[in-house]
Length: 293
Ligand code: CO
Image (cartoon, rainbow, N blue to C red; front, side, top):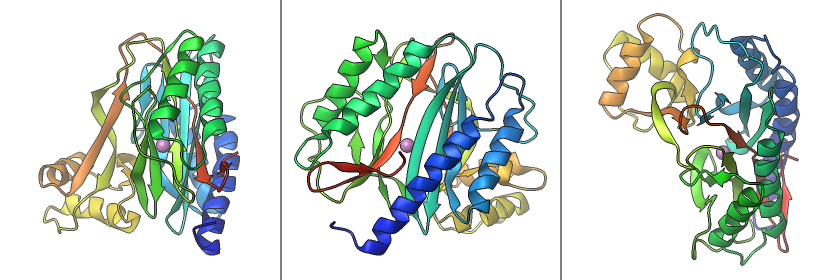
């Protein structure tokens, strides 16, 4: 291995834990169950295991692909027919495992299988020397074989120390060239398959933010937000995690002053359905080790 043993162990431990917690969390996605309760219970399980969240548990419904999570006091429940993406990030000392699956409460088995098969096909070809473009080509081909479109403007991503969006970027569509994969790289592959347009856009609602500048704030509500944001060391947090009132005013103030970056809910066209599958892997001399499987 190119990375030192302690770092390697942290990635492995985070992966094993993420795998276990993802499945325990997904088991709570049942018709009639409370979204807020499911999210809070799953997030608490990660902390009880002695690890930390790399980002708030993402639960995105139907045409939403990513970046939704429970709102403060959220009254949504899971309904028959829902297609639910569960995306979990666990970190140990800043070393991240990012993994996702899709729970089908309707009749979308083929669509769920499309992203899962694309993920497996991509993992099977990862080794030093292959390009990210070649990985994207395999993802697109596999999803299209199942009769769906890949989401073109969502990608897999490298996982650095306290860094969720490191290089390389792993496209979900065919591309010429791209980065050359090297031994020791750590990244997540996350194919999204859709019945919609194949392009996601930003919705109005924002539940997840990330601190991008270290400047102080004056507004009391903004200071309360930063008290939650700062210990995250640049990793995302949820609006729901900030205690007290006037949280939205504080958040808006911090976004306007360039201290926070917002992650709006991302969705394909209304009425469409999007599935997702994701694993984190470490590139080895002749292939890869999937940390979250
Ligand atoms: Co990811």
